[in-house]
Length: 434
Image (tube, rainbow, N blue to C red):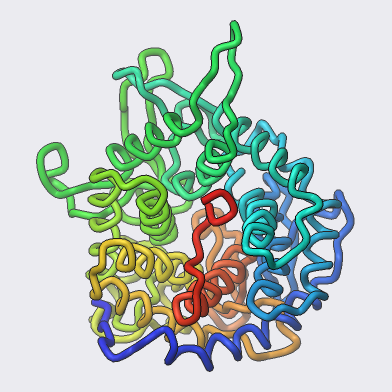
């Protein structure tokens, strides 16, 4: 169980975030400027970023990292880099009809630029183009719509209309921003489809089908557990079964999916204060606190079989170098921000202190990458354990020591959030259209 440090403050972590930004600058520059078509960096192999052509869902994290670096440090070199890469790499992502990752790619880039414009940090001469990109992105994301038996619906994953992914809850930020910009999705017969309504329905159905509450329908299960995927009959919209793509099983919890739910629901709660979102956020955050190791860095799945060989693994700090199961630091980086946002919104100190405790762990070795030869910023991240995509080093039995683009990005986003908590203004994904 996470040992929450009640004495931590965001200001007290300022030296750690400053060191992180210093290391981050060199890591971003080390990646260079890929040309369109090169493929986006996904994870490291022997400390060097490699691409994996799948859906290029990490491109926005790469480009968005440069923009966050500018946001935190005022170094215009990174603003210019982020602007160039947004113009050259991101336009295809705006109208990409084959993915559910619009919030990851486009809110992390165009959304950050719009927020910086609204804060008066950068010139707003490209505001119209930036807003148009976000409007189109939100509408394209909303068009991936599948109805359920009660007449509501969800945004389906790239697996097809039968599939509701838990991680999409955070990528639905694109609908929120597009709605705040006054946009709608135009359907057949000029039907005006409300983006906010689709966002809310997706959020409610994710809370209903991907999160468990330990009572009623879920009496057999544990409160706060999540399933990566919910499967539906596309003919009549009925829920059929839980499933998973990247977790160990549908009846264990893939911890990065859990973290996406924690942060996604906390941010949705900031955008639209609904009791169902608050309950989903609290349940998932409570589960994370209860089922994480003492330092707050989880193993990749709570049901991974090798955990049975790690006696008392939840009573001590995680061991990324153990020989049985990998940890996933990227899940911790996402979860920490979810804990902080939920605690801030609800005014509940326990969640804030839990988030600060996880952040302290990640902003130091062995998770913070201090080796200038390693292109990653956050070490011991895991991508796809069931597919065997993660590097297992010679002499090791499980993956460790490598980084992912989403892990690096979310560590930067976490550091920026902490800096803003210490010295405002408060940072939200919809800050450009608040």
